[in-house]
Length: 249
Image (cartoon, rainbow, N blue to C red; front, side, top):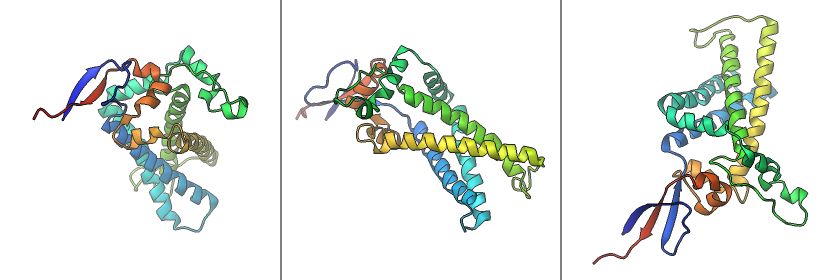
């Protein structure tokens, strides 16, 4: 049987004791999955349409628009229904201090060590918050990029022959149309670059890929990894220690 205790996260793990760090709520994980699905689908269909690949263009364009609505709608609904979580995330990614600067000068959390520090010595990385400086920057880029894609995408969709399902329709001048399409394209390229780095570090990199299952799993982060990479956040929490105790019978 198990005994659940609330304890100081600074306590060390002991034999028979597992410290669990709950990082992402179910609402956050569902929202993140919807955003990822919408973004990847929009990226693929957008690239195919832009490259002129022989595909059913009307179907691909409709799918692009619908997945774009999912990409924007999911975080919008999340921000409204889970405003406390959204506000906390926004506050975290927009707050920077000397430890974040230390992450940048490490360099880049130590990720550039193999290319710069040839002697194999690891750079000192200051304790980080729930998100390190790089993740904070990526979060800001994704939010601003998402807003840019939402506005330009809405205008582009409404400027088509049938508009948005024939309900919303407006005409733009050729110059304005070119500007909106260009802005949409630039925002898309920037978002894809940020997404590729984010995906590599969270799902492929041998050290940091444990974070992938934190978001796409049960929301529980690896304790040792969190203690090393996000020690500042961990020390501000209370975590659950699950101690296995012998059956009384």
